[in-house]
Amino acid sequence: MLYVDGKWVEEGQVAVHPEDRGYNFGDGIYEVVRIYKGRMYQWDGHLTRLFRSAKEIKMELPWSAEELTDLANQLITKNNITENDDASLYLQVSRGSAPRVHDIPSGIQPVIMGFVRRKDRPVADMKKGLTAQLVEDIRWLRCDIKTLNLLGAVLVKQYAKDAGAQESILHRNGVITECSASNLFVVKNGELYTHQADNLILHGITRQVVIDLARNNGITVHEEAFDIAFLKQADEVFLTSTTAEIMPLISVDGVAVGNGQPGPVVLTLQDLFEQHIN
Ligand code: PDD
Image (cartoon, rainbow, N blue to C red; front, side, top):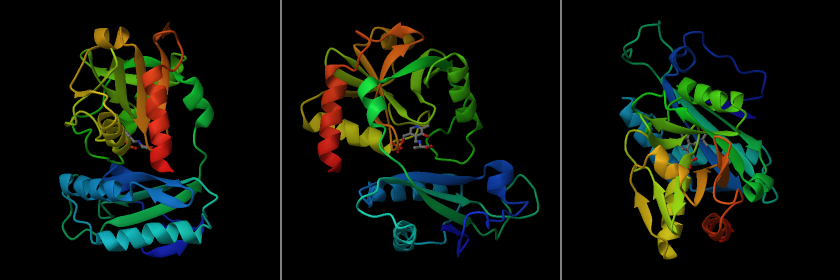
């Protein structure tokens, strides 16, 4: 069952308005929420970010936090997600439909849509790590907004795949920002480095969990920009996201990171994360 614009519908019955602005312009916002053992993880953080994204694109959400929480819980129960299931919940809000103009039509009503999919944790990849390719960050200058307009993310990920890598690491004029759908961390001399939470990256929920876990366990974290040269001499590199969790990157542009295996700091953080979600 999906929830679309106030109605519960089966897949295949969903009709998109031809002038829906999410569809025409990518004019809307979204969240991807992890469900571990039937329960939402970090829901409050996702909800706060959804309201912030809405505000930043000048969209007023006509639903309260309680109503959205109720909707998310209904998506879980109506799709029979139980304590035996790991899953992912997708929620998007389009600006709504109106005759096609670029500026924001007045009186337009946002359209919400949500669905849930069973999804296993990427356990094998987290043990082994992924390969990465540096790609120029061609996205816009408001990467802090979780917008439906994802063509930049689509292309950078594809460029990395075309080059034979599994993940893209993005840089703007040589400064590392994040990955196509995740945040990036490097480890140098036992300390973590990740781009500061400004307009050039998404303020990832998992990024913040990792920063907090690290600091609470005596690992120093630097939230500051660093360049390609710093990345290339890092001891460890990893990415974080709701679906990828804490994912080691074992090579960059075909060159091994460290000894080409997930390193001790990333393994420690994975352990801490495991305890945190259980
Ligand atoms: N991606 N950076 C970007 C550009 C992202 O799209 C995401 C999330 C993240 C990590 O944020 P979080 O830890 O809150 O998931 C960082 C989601 C999962 C997606 O688009 O599928």
